[in-house]
Image (tube, rainbow, N blue to C red):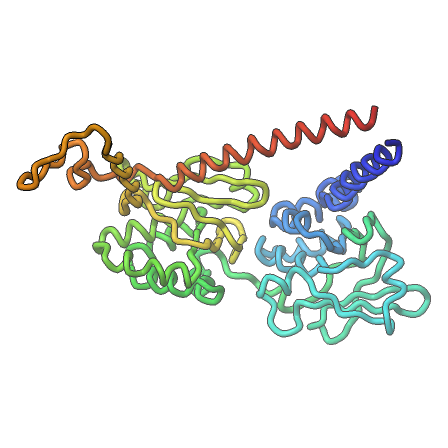
Length: 409
């Protein structure tokens, strides 16, 4: 009994430790170091902080306020600042000890800039070299091999989850520092086509009115939910049968006239208007999230956000696993009619062979009213099943807690 108690206690403590060790918040870490307040501010403004926090293995090469002042004196756009700072986020763990024990004295580290797909060739990599005299040099791979920044100190380390270190200056990179296009200059359909949403992009390009609506809203804020190619191919016969006006409404339905980062979508659950919303024509959908998963729901179907193609305020483009369908244009699948009750064989009078009983009005399925577009049987079933799962999970959790408490007595 004592051994069982001990094992259960160890398992409980281990689960808590693992949960805590995998969680980090770069904003809180840097908030304890005022000399990095500007760097911290721009990590939040460019949404890089969110990307850092969701990754389990990361190294942040922080720049102090003086170094950030040198960068801001060039008056770069917020998009260029994001590219430059993303070059300072390494997709591997490099603590102080590892930096001084690099195999063969040098390493090439991938960065978040490289992961965005915006860095051609090797320009998204950083060269880290263990120099003589205990110094460690850093340099962007596209700057001719110059190691123009040095390791200064370790700010905080959580092996092998996150390492926050200070380097002496901004890493120089012509590609990262190149002026990034403004929202109205971005080729939205080009971005979609290059990342698995070509079918939707082609449909948008073919519709002059919808394309103009997208472009007109790009400067003030726009969030697009782009179906992946396989999903749109399967949906295309339905789209083809829509009228010209309905095609425009459908394309505009898949975009929201405000900027919504993924973290904002997770915290702003509820109804959301779209570019197609116009008075009585609601053309809205519901945003829901469960943990890290975000779904969009109408009376017709539910889709899941599967990836991010662009997240640079004021623009965001996300991919979805299916095509979200508005109730204003499509009808939900009809609910299957219940099977007729079996006839009672015993004691029932036999009908004469030359007469056939007429079906009663109540049992005539063909005369039954059609389901309205608002009836979503599949969504209702899913909601009911979810309720059962939650209840079951709570019950098992309560039983486990009681058992654990009993064993620990």
